[in-house]
Image 1: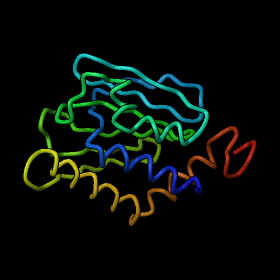
Image 2: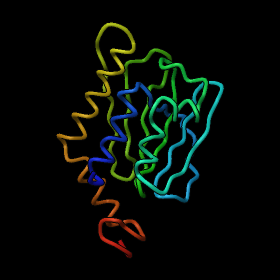
Image 3: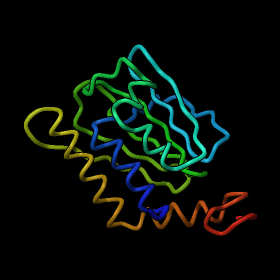
Length: 162
């Protein structure tokens, strides 16, 4: 699978599972290429990885519950991720919120998506679908890869020296 598809899969996995982040997200302290930090009411944790697939696996229900075991699916939860050297934050800031926020600070990207549907689960799934559409149709993934290639000491795209 190409790196762009891996990245998109990881981001979408977070949101299709109804898992995301709030503005009070904890800082990710990782020296690896990929990492994720999650914080829900009552628990928090992080994991660092050397492979993209490990990063993706951290976003499944078991992975996130391993990081924030008290997360129930409708709570605010903070997830901060790093895919190579690009920081990503997103989240539902309050209990039962259908509003998903998404940010890539290095690119100046700040968006919110308001889900609709019957019940909070359907609303969060709809917000996640909107985010996926945004990423695919607005050139955001291309911007991420360009930024990463230009700003990383060792880019998997352009090699040593960025």
